[in-house]
Image (cartoon, rainbow, N blue to C red; front, side, top):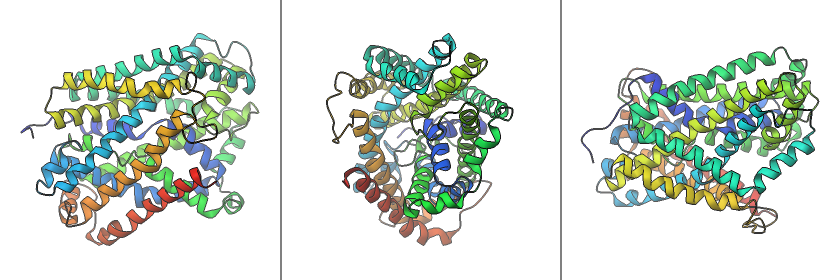
Length: 460
């Protein structure tokens, strides 16, 4: 282990970069969609409850392990518990999760670059188009593997270049203004929604408490959706936040910093819905189209909107910034892991991982065209579905359980060590009475999530 470790230059830099890791594309399309589907403000309240009861505690565990060890997941368990070799092997599952995540997230970030350029160029909004036409645009992009490879290479190389410059000179110096711009665009676009004719109807659909919707859905399915969003919006389970814990100083308590990250993450999700749903109701398009909300429904909206090139360009620029902030954060994690694991230079870690990540992304891209007849999970599934299943239904939950057990049981790092590290610094403190809840309830919740996920995929 190295004697010195880079640290963030400012606390704001840490908060914005850690929030950038948590704030991803799921905040923009998934949270608003499921909030509207499961009862608006009622669902939001349930989600917030689970966010602070489940998501926040697990993030404090990741950050505590990172700050105490001054290492990424690549060498943290060896540093904190050198004589407990079982834990040293668990890191490989989390490391694998980072590569799988980057295998498809680089491609999706490339989609955002493609759509940003297309919208700004006027290709989608020169005339009003329906959802069938905009859906055709999206399908054509998926079928064009050359374009997808080019955009994926551009965004991935850019993110790796930022990380190659170092923590302060690259990641912090570039990501901090990137996140400030992201929040500025978000607030500007949300403010503009107040002047749309469908604002009242859109906000009513999105945030008005609707107990009939909440009751009409399977209560277990609703709770599952809320717990799943609360757990995975913060990116737990693969050490993606732990790396930033390793760069932290001890001036602030970890619980305080985690709450700040959760608040920023939730603010983005809430504001995204304020942008999306009033626009949908203003231009008479369906607001419940799930993932297609971004690439199909909203393209149709901007094509019908006055000054659609401007507003659409701003929106997809916001989406691109959100995706890039997450991409840089996750890539910094794999770079940090490589440096800690192999004791290599940052430049070498960047060069090797750039090639590896692009190779991981290639099957996902080809899964929509060259390999379109390959259905790894049956039905109409593609390679992307396989990557998502391995990560979302397996590695994230198991990784989170590893952190919980490691930080709460004596045969791991132990709750006393975790509590001491979490409470070091000024701010909100974690009470020792949480011990039993963390040891028994949190792992049970994640096990239930895994079982429900398997039933949803293989139940039929």
